[in-house]
Image (cartoon, rainbow, N blue to C red; front, side, top):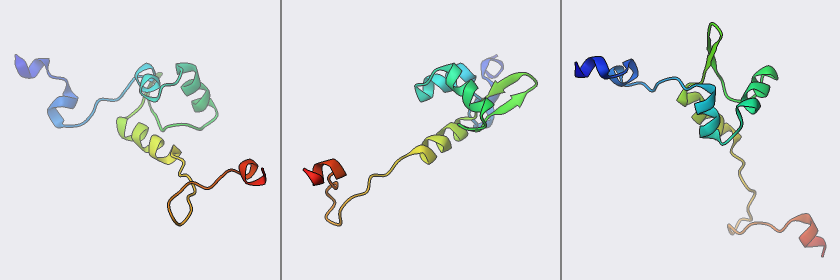
Length: 88
């Protein structure tokens, strides 16, 4: 009966699709934000099974990677001062 208790995602080595609540928690956002983003065609990719909306972990991870902002640094690796600090 042990195999019967395992979910299909555990059996085939894939990760289970996340509900919008789970995805919002992972991203630290409100569910309403994800819903608004879907309506505006922005945010992480999602899948729809009838009326059910799910997020794949790989798509959440990809969204996080794409949203990453890299700082611009000097050639010596130190952060550049802001324009306000440079004018002072």
